[in-house]
Amino acid sequence: MTFAQRLPAVTHARVLAIALPMTVAHLTTPLLGVVDAAVVGRLGDAALLGGVALAAVIFDMLFWVFGFLRMGTVGLAAQALGRRDRVEERAVLARALLVALACGLGLVALQAPIARLALGLAGASAEVNAAVSDYYAIRIYAAPFTLANYVVLGWLVGLGRTGRALALQVGVNLLNMALTAGLVLGAGWGVAGAAAGTLAAEIAGTGAGLLLCLRLLGGGFGVPRAVLLDRARIAEAFLLNRDIMIRTAALMFAFSFFAAQGARAGDVTLAANAILQNMVMVAAYFLDGFATAAEQICGAAVGARRRADFAAGVRLCLLWGFGFALAACAIYLATGPALVDAMTTSPEVRAAARDFLLYAALLPVAGVAAYAFDGVYIGALWSRDMRNLMLVALAVYLVAWWALRPLGNHGLWLAFLAFLIARGALQALRLPALSRRTFAG
Image (cartoon, rainbow, N blue to C red; front, side):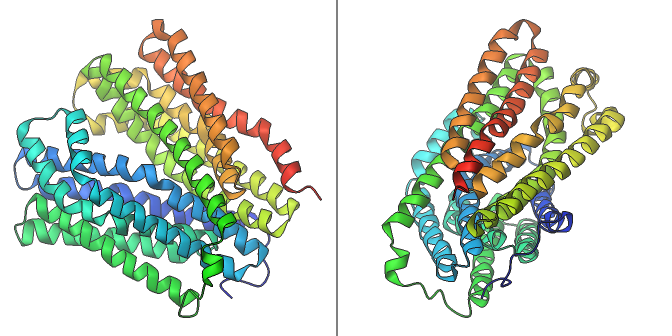
């Protein structure tokens, strides 16, 4: 047995027990970039600092594409849990680890063309490119371990083991910070030390995660070969991961398009948008926590064929998500000007950021349904519909931007708000039909 014999009731406490630990885990991740910047910044070389920052962005974008390894594993594991299918719980983990290993080794094998493409698109100076190359040449070997950690995290969350998932994630991040500081400042390894610290932390995290999984499984995977290589299950996982990957690529395009249009409006507008987006990202980590709760609760409910639990999971995750989103909106409206002033000393950027602050404050409220329903759809394995609705919402975004171009950056922010609202609204409209089909009979 890897979990309780009976699924716990869907209550406010259960939603928070999943969402809050995952929020804390998400919040520790941005600290890695802060620590890297602070440590490398003490070396007194702007090119090194810029190189580490740019390399971090490259790896964030690269690994974000493989987010399906976490999200897909949550949904599959949660449904196996709901069905009380202990063999399939094990098989989900084993199959996903094999995919992670293959993808990670593929990234290592393709490291040279990936680096050339990334550096070509960045267009940085020769000094910054040299620092990026030093960092990249070491950290790329962390790819198989990073992706394996995605799988382990997703599997633990899918089985409702969020406390262990939190401990593992925070432990990896804290070890990363400590190793980076020690290797860069103590050992004098420079940029290579920052990359080596991350590599070592990811390896340690994979080892600790696998040991934890084996302990929960009683000492071994114990998956029959026929189950592990079951064609129907493999096809299901492939289609799920493909759809989530397309959805993620569309989301990445939406954010990249926003940044690109802001850059075309000038340096001041670009800086103002970047500051406001950093504020929005903090709220997004809380919304991600409730999306994760929806993945686990709704996935387990579908597996157990409990329609009432599914409906309760949707309702409570939306309720708490809206509560946090409204709180974030109120906080940003009240403290936004002070937060902006704390992040920049430029009078022009401060003024521009204040002009667009209202949009940033409204963004969590506009996006809460999109986040929550993403979790619902992933848990229920409705990945095809999630993919298609994301593409429709992206079209709404681009059309809205085109129509609102005369408004400049105001139009860009309004178009992005329309994108988030469209995502949530489309998924809400589609949900009743999908729910009837899933629980029919």
